[in-house]
Image (cartoon, rainbow, N blue to C red; front, side, top):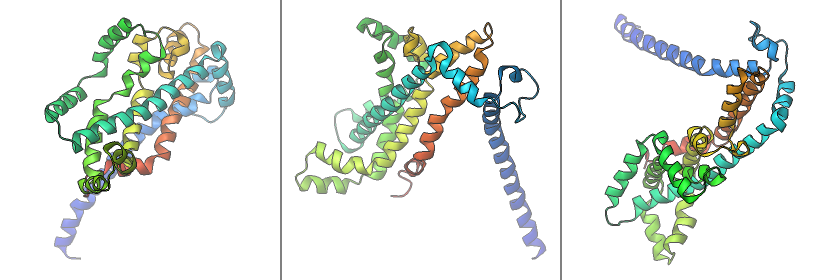
Amino acid sequence: MSAMDSTLLRPRLLGRATVNVVVAISALYTLLPVLWLLLAASKSRDALFSSSILSFSDFSLVQNVKDLFAMDGGLYGRWYGNSLLYAVLGAALGALVSVACGYAFDKYHFRHKEKLFGLVLAAVMVPQTVLALPLYLIASETGVVNTFWSVFVPVLFNPFGVYLGRIFAQGYVPDEVLEAARVDGAGELTTYVRVSLRMLGPGLVTVFLFQLTAIWNNFFLPMVMLSDQDLYPVSLGLYQWNSQASVSPEYYPVVITGSLLAVLPLILAFALLQRFWRSGLTAGAVK
């Protein structure tokens, strides 16, 4: 190898090493809190306040899980079921609505289409916390405050999902296929359900995962809408228990264990749907 080749190779190796160091630091920054949560959830209450929390001794995870589901008459189990209902059903219906709207914006021509889509893009930039008070006033006028519907209905409509739906429709559904279906006599609804929706499968899963994560982590809207503990999602329920922990220390282990269990559905969803999600993110990259 000549001196010139070694001179050119050295900056490349240094750049690769720098990238690897940055990636390693980012991974540690992400994984260390998860490791702490896992270890803390396996400790008894006394061990949580000692310096041995990072050790693998004093394993009490099974007992902590039992205490978690027994606390306050098994309220955590109800919160968990509420979150699954809000998130899974809401994400599924919301993804169908978003993809259908995005498909309509891409494949159909109607008056003021681009202006309406501009409003959708503007809505993407509006923080959800800003909408909480108007949504509460609307729910109050319709009499659905402190009900399942006050939290469930608002999460069905996601402007960012509509934007993604249009991108996926552009990348996955060729206009020639739709024209061929229409020539064969298929109606618009039949064409969408039997032809387009199958092509939009990876995009639908991607929007579903985004919706699932947003709804599962939703906190402010349930806090504004709900006062009945039986309707709380996990996020709001754990917040309430955590606020009580300063007075009643027995809540500390169950809050930590509950936080660990609350992460599992998202990890499971991304692990099972990873193949569709990764292909969905490349929509439009190759046409």
